[in-house]
Every structure is written in structure tokens, then in C-alpha cells.
Image (tube, rainbow, N blue to C red; front, side, top):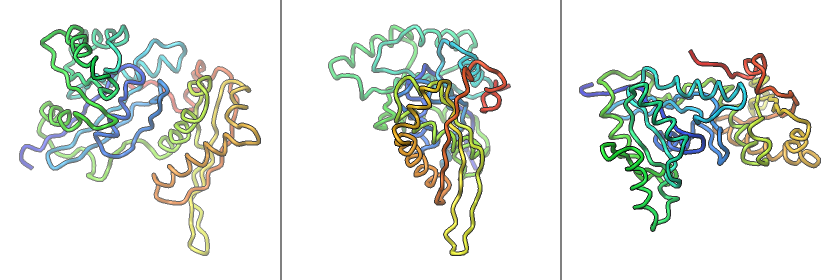
Length: 303
């Protein structure tokens, strides 16, 4: 293919700036979970966009933040390591707010590592009309007048096609790196556990989400004589305190039922098969600080 381009693009930014929503919009499929809760993304995930002009492998990363436990340290280290060997970095910022210390930390990190990057000012739809010019001036001052940036709205799609056009200019000529119908590189159990955790984030109070992990214990295809086959999934939701367990289960199991129903619906869409989901809740005190537990639940440093 003449002029066909392919390469890797990392999205980097503070927590909750909309990196995952942006990747989902650019690819046109939901491949990574989203929620209003910071630190929704916990693992570097590759989303693959294949077009007639080329193939872009987007790397979604956890938000760069000041860690308060071992899990946080792993997330930040993996996010920062994801700039190595990629063709371009998209520095995603929340334009509904003026640039802050966390943004400066990432800007300085990219400069120190001599990494070339594109600036994407996301959430532009949330900036009030009378503040738009002021916000642009703030970011011009923050980056310097010689740095171009793109205004985007991952929610509405504004600026996304222009962002793709710019990204392609940074990619080398080369063949497809993944099969045309591949849109994500994650194993099935990771995707399923994230779909459960997404519903925990959406449906529970602020005190629960950050201390939640989900472990898929078993996935089994059940074949019936009547031909109505289904996939049985057994999963454990891990929390750090018994009070959190109570919140997750809810009165007479009501909250766990809501979480399970919504997760099951999304799982059925993902694997294109009816799903029977069984959920259990387990208390593991301070699991985010314990290396052995982090490894057990699938959190380790990328090398």
C-alpha cells in the first residue's frame, strides 16, 4: 500500500481529563471504561484504529498524579513509561479548567524526556462561551505562543477528525501491525473485570471506588441441549473495609443486583453471548499497599 502509515500514540494527562472517552470516540467503539471518578483507568490499554490510510495504535494510560500507596506508584510509573518508543504523545488537558500544577509536572516531564507531543484541549464543550477566549490565552501562556494545540470535545466529537489527521502526519510508512478487525489488545478477563468495576464506580459513593478491584475467578461456556447456550462468569469484587462491602451489597443485596445487571448487559454485548454473572464481595484490608495482593489482582509495573 502506497503511503500507508502505522504507529503508536500514547495519551498522557492528569486523572479525569477524558483520555479514555477520547480514545473511545476516536476508535468509534467502547474499548475502555469511563466514569466521572478519577483514576478509572488502571492499566495501559491499546486501542487500534484501522482506516484506509493507516493504522493507529492508541495507548490509554492511568492519570498522572501524586501517589499515596503502592498501587498509585505503579499506575504513575506505567503511565510515564508508556511514552517510550511511541511515535507521538497526545498531552490531554481538561480545558474546562485553567492549567494547574499537575499539568505543569507533565509538561516538564515531557520536556525533560525530549518527547514530541501534540496538545489536545479536551472538554471544550464545558467551557462557557464568555470564557473561551480567556481560556485559550491561559493555555497559550502556559505552553508558549510557539506551541500549537487542538481544541477537542471527546463527548461531542468536536476536533476529533482533525486530531486524527495530525496524528497520521507523525506516523512512519509501514504495514498493519494488527489484524483489521482488532480494536483492543486486552485479554478477555481484563475487559470483563473492568466492566464490573465501571458499574461500581458509577453506582457507589465516593468512598468506595478507589479501593475496589475485581478478579474474574472463572469463565465457562455452558452448552444446553435446547441450543440456548450462555457464558457463566464468576467474579469477586475486592474492597478494603467491611463498611465498603456493606455499601456494595446494599439493602437485601439491592446494590450488588444493580451492579450485576448493568455489568452483565455490557458483557453480553462484548462477547456476543448471553451471560450469567455471579458476584461476590470480599474484604482484603490495605490491598493497594501490598505487593503480593497487587500482583494477584493484576497490577504490576510494565517493563
